[in-house]
Image (cartoon, rainbow, N blue to C red; front, side, top):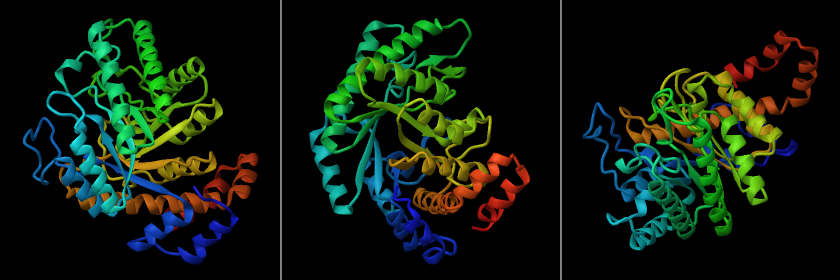
Length: 372
């Protein structure tokens, strides 16, 4: 991001009121904020209660890109599986069509997610599956996803290991599963690094695995990434923090941002959304829950020098997805403005922190959070 004394002066001079419309894009430009949405945010959405979807239109990638563009969003994340034929071969024609659309709409492909959960083959895991053959196939899919990402022009690839974990106690040998997972990530990271792409791991407590996923916390993921980076050299593997995943275990998301910085693990992507604490992965419109905690989370990104993308990851089943994506962008922008206003008072904030005066901390930020 572009955060300096000069840009911070613009907050009150040029953005004194609530951000809407074109002012949001100007605000993003002034402060170097890169904002994206996953193609899946554009719908349609399917769950076990509405297996035919919620009626928001076609779910092909062309229709989804049009809806993301209609929401006024610059960046877009993809899943590798979108670009495969029924024979699991790379669909070169579709890649070409999508690249043409992105050029036409002046959009940026940001991140390629690796789908190792949709196919029933992965029901017992991807890179930690009990079957060696399936584990090897999972690695092949991930490496193929790197190829797709490179062709499309993405800057990173990611693994959300949705099927890797356990549903019952005693089901897996936790140590062996972690070994398999770390070894698999090493193989993926080496290929990503060779291709010039950053590799990100997205932790989550559970769901679809009912008990825990193999990397349930940012801390666990950081240990895996750190080990992989030591084996491979450099710091190519990092973590994607999904805000809703943090709420699932009631973690202080801001602290996890600093944790990665403290222990030298790259923060490679943000997914923004919201959920209730200790709930499922609700993926609701960003900025509609605890403003204090979310603003604190964004402040941590600013303070640690994060310079990557902020990407919507939401499933707004009963809301028009274009309106939902546009709302998330708007609410995120206003929360980011609050975080920047707090950051503009950093010296005073740190001085009060040194006194331990909790009331004065709240006095310093209360009007920013509730009015700014």
